[in-house]
Length: 452
Image (cartoon, rainbow, N blue to C red; front, top):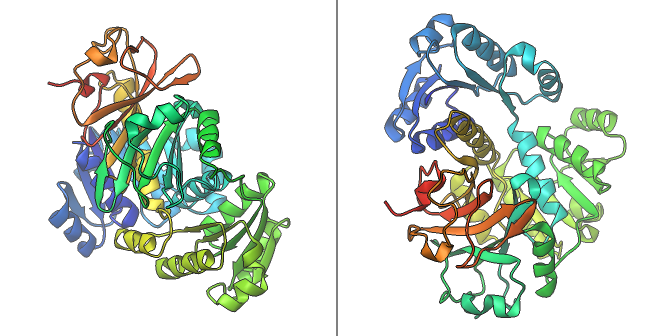
């Protein structure tokens, strides 16, 4: 597809990175020459330097573009840009909208504004964090097939009964309702076979129906109930979105923010939250506010370094769950070296949502069978959800007889609301949702799981 990305900051750059990897033709517009220079030297995209106006959009090919994504730092500019693009002929438009007031208004007026989708990185990050807090045993929880299947990531502790276990013995000990489909060990990522032996420190991804996942964690005696009390450090957009979501879930929230004006705003917006106006980067402040008695700490300030340090401190004093928001990729691995689980990265979450929409556009046009795609384990693996059509050569053939690629694993089949972990004798049926795990890029149809 022909896609225009307006804004080459962190969000725009990451979106362009994802979209060019998918093989789309991308044109990037930004007024800052240094940002355009970075795109030119690292990504395969056409670039235009300048302030966006009608003439520049025409030059970028808006009249024939399939999609325009406006991802500048200005909500107003993004909305206006999308409106101009639709008038020029762009079929689909996506606007980045950060402000809470703007976001709610834009959602209400989306059809009138001609927007196909709005993206809010801070809200997306808050949703990701709240999902993990509902399931504290996990580092990450990815829903598929409208929540009928989940992919859950967790770190293997030394006392975990899975340590030293060969995967072919896994189902002899645990129910067949779950499957270990991906493992990261150090810098290496594996789609493990039956002879793979799990070790302490592995990051393990398991797939199954939500109830089966819960049963699996209980069987390992590492299941933890959802958090009941959470301390949030940082009262920016993401902190407010997260506080609102947690309060709606019945979770007690204590939010620490140093800016008095922000504190007053939050108290007015969210009177049920316990708002503390203090410097949350100071350990004595956190101790005085009861950090050790909390079920979780979420460090969501504007500083990656502070977030990582706060998360590490919380873990060191015995807080069961610590989550850090990290924007920069090079600091993500640093967070893990401090003993934190995979940090939350808003721009990557946002890129995943946009990529999902782009793939659904392909699917609607008949060019793809992909319903959803998620990148896991630092983006080294993809988990794809396909919808099986009647004419697919994958339908009606036992998996043991299906010539699948060596770098692809059929992890789950969702049929009539049930998540099945398939064996060799099982076959895909028309209408099934199929979850496939792969190291391969650019798979767009269910048939791509087959050897060429």
